[in-house]
Length: 207
Image 1: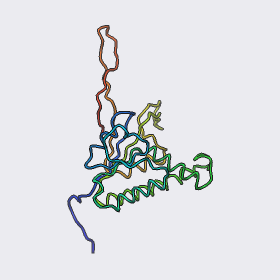
Image 2: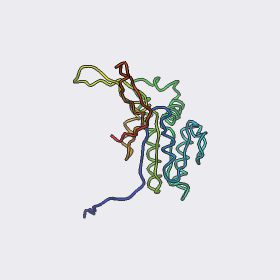
Image 3: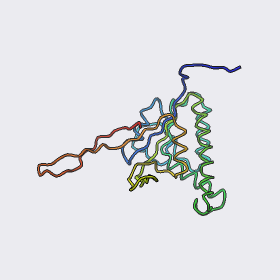
Image 4: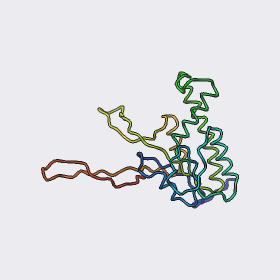
């Protein structure tokens, strides 16, 4: 028989925060309940937070995540800061495993296929953290990338995660909440009737 239920099923949340350099991704992540930060790039040196020192390898990162999932009461939120630096560890791991000089050396996109498989290992480990009742927050840098619509003329720039085109969609699909942080820029008219950009206010986009 089918066991059909209704209503919200409470569980820990999977959150991804990405944005431009210095906009406050790590600070926002550190404001989550009782966070423990896996500092993959050394970006928390100026912050008074609980952290795990920078992992020296991809396997070490996976092991740290597994230990957090297995250690009751260690934290309420696990933060990986950042996904793009974690991806560099994964790339180094894949290249060493298959004895290649770079991820491009595999040919025919095979290197990126292996990279996606490695990130699936990380997602599986993080899912165990969520199953243990611990929120997971992953931060990522953003960069401008030219985007072309196949059925329309012209192109435009848009912000995207500073990750490979294979890993970024996996991260977006994995999370429950995707947040983009940026500086809001307004156009103002000067006394000479010219237009100029003005701003600096930080904003969070949810869609």
